[in-house]
Image (spheres, rainbow, N blue to C red):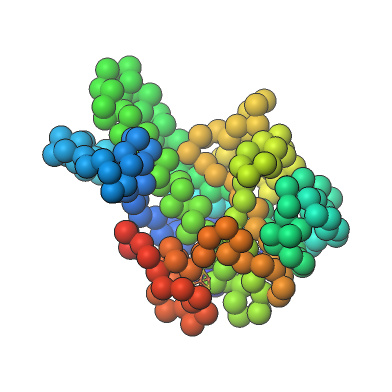
Length: 246
Ligand code: SF4
């Protein structure tokens, strides 16, 4: 599966559902619904609603991923320069170590889920609308994790390491730098654009940046292998602890 993906590709590579495995984690959907794992127990009505929304969501999802790498031309404690862009990410030098390249990517489950959620709101089917929205959010999170796994696996044959992903708007990285990330890896091949507020359209999309290199520090905030589905990976650093399997 990862043969389709060159982790150091200097030109944009697009993957679609033929290469992307996508499973929705029920726990993640319920988390978006406000349930706390181990504390809140959904009743039968909620679980039936989840089943309905999941079936609907799975029929509407169109997972896609576009990815491009760029050689790192400069690194400072809080800055990475690559591909003519400069990313200001707090403490990234300490967290990721010395890099050879960065990989920028955008993944999406498409706009059909959002369109259906809007219709359900208009039809006053509010519980299903909210559950379907949560299914879409959980799906794109799962997709972002999966592409991170794909990149890690694709890098192994060339003795490269791939870090955990980071995204503009999180961990102190300014959302406005979505613009630079999109210049490095345009979203148009998968129909994802940025609006004037640097928000992606469709909304069920996630942009990522990973570090690449033989010395790159992986697992900088959690152990990637713990929720990686690559069962036969000889390089696994920790057993998988997942609630959903691809
Ligand atoms: S098991 Fe670990 S090393 Fe192997 S592909 Fe997954 S994240 Fe990478």
